[in-house]
Image 1 (spheres, rainbow, N blue to C red):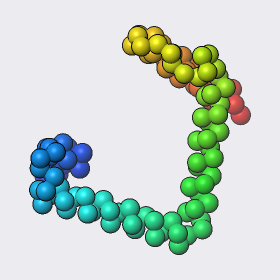
Image 2 (image 1 turned 90 degrees about the vertical axis):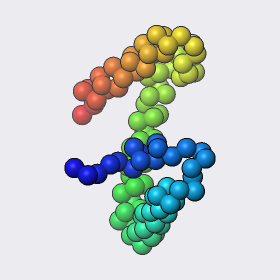
Image 3 (image 1 turned 60 degrees about the vertical axis):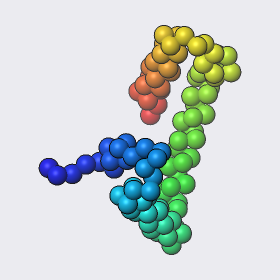
Image 4 (image 1 turned 90 degrees about the horizontal axis):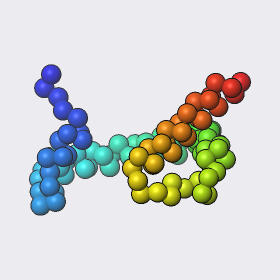
Length: 103
């Protein structure tokens, strides 16, 4: 197709090659995109309200996760990968159950 994702391109650059023109161009493009977004955000009350509402949903979801994942202060307190995986998968199972029972 003749295209590549930015992530794939940036992986080719090492710490010693940050002065490469392609890398610098992509970095500047990223700054431009962020600036455009900030200008649109500041200009539009509708966008600000929408983002605020979505952030509230995420914060509420995180609060629910803290409530249902209460053991050991909500922290995964083991270094064993298998136990960490079981804890995270259990949390995902509980999250899915909440989605199904919440109207």
